[in-house]
Image (cartoon, rainbow, N blue to C red; front, side, top):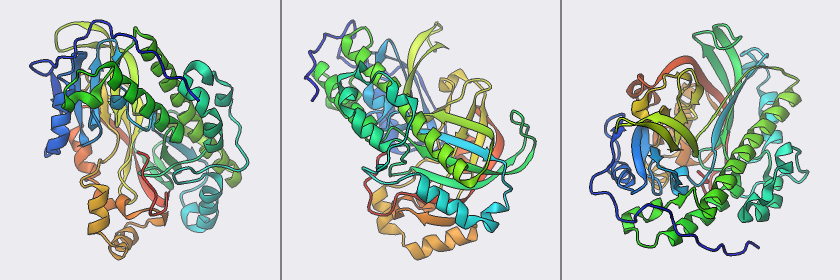
Length: 411
């Protein structure tokens, strides 16, 4: 069991909120009032430098989902998020798109055999990856989590996480991939139970370090990176980044291998993370800051990313334009337009099946809280950020698996 850490005084920053928020830019229209208020609150943190709110934004804990926050040598655990380093990974296969019809049973079997969904999902026969040889003792929390993390290695979790096959239509050459239609495997998940435990531990710790924060800022408590606590969280966060990447690598490796296929293009990006980056800031300076992207995709100039829609709506492969107005960020998906509770009350599976049939989607499993109608229009989201990213390919989901109904979300 982890020892209770000794708290270190935070260097420099007061707990008194700024009278006015630091500059931040809002992309998109009609965003939730609560998400807007959360962004305003975040930009009043004494350590805040700049911010941006993406067009898929909706309410979260502390920083809204779709929120981007730059801080001065401080990290905010809840501005990183609960599912640390949640990410997207796409493998374009050397199988024809027609396999979605001619070999659907094989594709379905590959997904169902080679990953696991749901809270606590594990592999009885543990999978191997060199991430388990990393220094898990870098943080007292991760040292206790190593065995559980190993059992869950290669699993997909719950909530909005998925593994799916679909058709990728390439508009402009990507790497060695010419324009045309391809079969692609796309996954979305993160650091599973280990990441959630890290987030919970250090969020509580940050609140103890800053007991004087007003209630509306309590979930935005930070850890100074000049302190032992801040350095320990950073080490744990980076390890969770490696672990989340390993989960996706194993899912794709095993699915592709069982199909006897090859990978001709790989695209991957993550969100729910903090990066040290140098930015030209609204105050006219250019310096290194800590950029938190909670449900936001890195969109530096020339950087490839994936922005999904829903189980029955397209996603897009994009190239970042590197806009400083968004802190070189973009949306990470369509974004929810209603809560999970509301979706389960409002929709029935008969309605959902009609939508899926119209769009040619075969759903293996999911909950009503993840139905397409619970999400915003992805094309409206993309239109609101045309200055942030350029679309180079479109992905249409065709065979989708998510956690079965009744699972508690991890996102």
